[in-house]
Length: 272
Image (cartoon, rainbow, N blue to C red):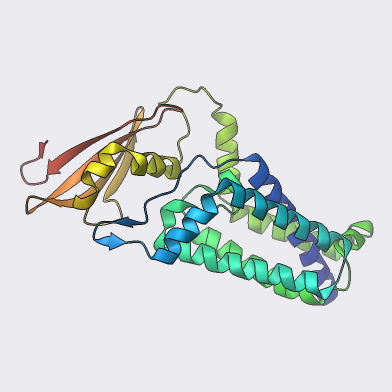
């Protein structure tokens, strides 16, 4: 049973790496780099660079190809170096996802290319941890992925099915993929799927953000909601010695998205 479990991990990890490779090559992220800081709440320099590198298209393609090579290697060889490289890769990915969860949850993990643009949640972190555990378990597997496929045992099939179901439940990318299929290009802006990562990217690149960035008191928004063709993002701020809220209205259109901003004085409920 232990050997069957170890062999299953090889097949599972090979499939995950190949799927991640394909997703990175096919699905582009709809985001741009977020700022390295918000006035008063700087983003750690390492995390800022990490996010910028992760969102580079060239880096995404390169990482995807490396994952593809590693996935194919798991299928054709049982050499310990390949298993160790896989374990290190998933351990590193777990650290990255954990850091993004704490410091830059809005950035998305990019684990499966543009499908991983949603905020990093507990499910993504748990999934990365479980993949790392699977990689550790695969170190002692005697068979290659191809060998496992040639003669699939009942135990391997059952374990594989359970693990695939578990990881599917922990993967927000499936919902993103379904929403993309339901929301084709050219859909009306009020019905168009607009991920939060896209909204933040549009906001951070706008003139409205540049005009008010130094007044923002916290990197985390107070509230986010969507109405019609705009998503509204409210931040606590301080203007002329008064505590206020700055509300940004970000377009959810597919192209030519604009951003409007208003200053709300909570006590007087006045908008400037």
